[in-house]
Length: 443
Ligand code: PLZ
Image (cartoon, rainbow, N blue to C red):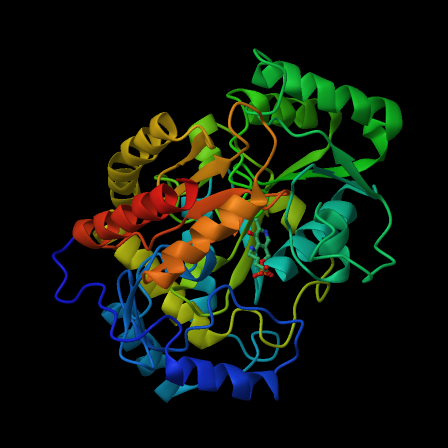
């Protein structure tokens, strides 16, 4: 983590007058259904800092939802994009291919869990990757059922809405949803009966699956190794492994949605690595390409190659500019050891969050891994979620120029997803503000 040259600096209220004017203009042109956590209009951004149109500099503890892990304008990514965009912007890989696509797939094969032979296909968004993982799993197994978990988030397209657990805002009045989707209880240590092990939580879920769906009908079990939008829920140790083992026994594909957790976010290349789990298929997006839209499905060669020629694709999937950005981002992750950087962020942040939990009974849980950390807010002495308090704390952070995000089925989780290249003093400043926000909001 380098020393910053600039830090948080507010010259107007947040949002400032120019942002407010832009927001009014936006409301006349942009559909109301598209929201913004903090309507501060950004002019430029760097490693953990956002510079707005009013001249304010904000601390970014959100990375555009876990995307700008290498920074929002990493010089190596900017140069790679500029070089590629000047050569050609697009040919369509399905029409005339280019090597950057192949190289991204080679990197994915090398970095994702397991040393088996792999293949990848590239897409534009996380939801599209998840949709394709399901297509591939169904095709390869000849089965239809897709199994997901409580609190899961997998996207906003029709199939992925069905896979996503939460109604508001993702699904409300957007049905009917895709069929053959089944939901199981997740391992949620804070809310499970005390002492329930990962293996027991897996047995609880898999017994339901056996009885209600039948293993023979299941194409895949799809799971986020640490749930993102659902509230940074880290399953009890052994849960993922037990589910993956069951899948292997039953000929069911185990699909890890690593879209939020992947690419160094949790202090290893993929969150599955922490649990020693080797998925059959992995979906990636977000952090893979330094902010450019790119997503992938990577999996066992025999599964991926089961699909007939021409069965997978899309006009823009694996766009050459996005591929160039991905290759530069992955190079940064390797050269700057961003797994260690994520771990360093954890080492700074976790003790400070634990201190807050000790001081404020409303901070009911502290959890996460690497640079994917959260606190869950409850009514003191209970497990009753407190989304209202969570919202007020987030707003207090925003007013002080620190971008934090909320999450959780009950909206009562404050989550931190700083860029992995955030300088330590910028991070600590953001955490000071969070502590102050909690203090003044709870008092
Ligand atoms: N799978 C695990 O986290 C995206 C969504 C924000 P897309 N999460 C942020 C919002 O409100 O839309 C996500 C994820 C996991 C899939 C997705 C979907 O990725 O690139 O947003 O389609």
